[in-house]
Image 1: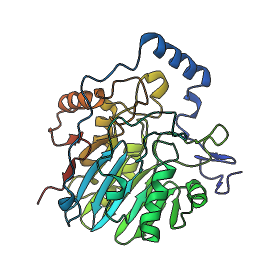
Image 2: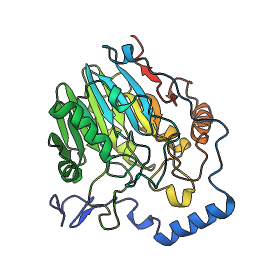
Image 3: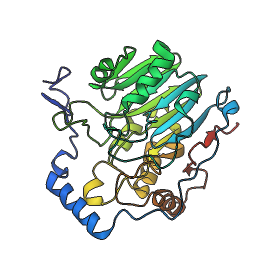
Length: 335
């Protein structure tokens, strides 16, 4: 049973949660089996033409007073907002898997090693998939910083965190908010799903985060297919727009999109990410969910190449939507 069940909410079910827009179109086990068989036969995924770029992080500047975002890898970003350090979907392990010997393996080290992180004030968790919620990583963060770190997550994720010894947790439903030390955090819809085993599909909710601080706003898309929720988010939060933009910065996923017949409902391709960047009302966007783990059929270096092409075709400036190297940082432009 779903302890949070509210029959008035169409994304709730008695046993968990659902995506009202796409549930009927989900890939079946047969679809996935056919995909894997075809990929083996055709030699996919193809190797990248070049390695995922990596730079040494600027630790002194990252830990200063400037508003910034540092790409640690995959969907893990270290944000400095309002003097606080915010970490998104932390995964520092070698594999995105429940096993240390099996599953997608990291091809580039984290941009900042977990033991070199500055004190973390907030961890945002978008959903429970292994490449976004890593047991070893969140336990290490909790061990280092204790209850200084607040974990903010969708409904149902808290039970898992508590089993891992973490107690400073806030769980949110879509459109619920929590205010903490100057950060106003709202969980917004995403087009995705959740599971960590064969018998817990969609028992935990998933989502994106809208974060507002004094003079700055950020959107963390988590993992999501393309859909009307981007426009819905902008419309519902429109009173918070400033100077024609709802968000000063958006973190948008651009990878794990092939084959489209399998991935289209829950992972955007770069062209869709550019459309989402515009529809969410972002002044600038940074690319996440690419280059670190081989999850699907496209080569690891393909997403940023397609992103650059799609951005140019859409008339965006080069600085409007950027794929940082792992370890690289974005700094808020001076006024």
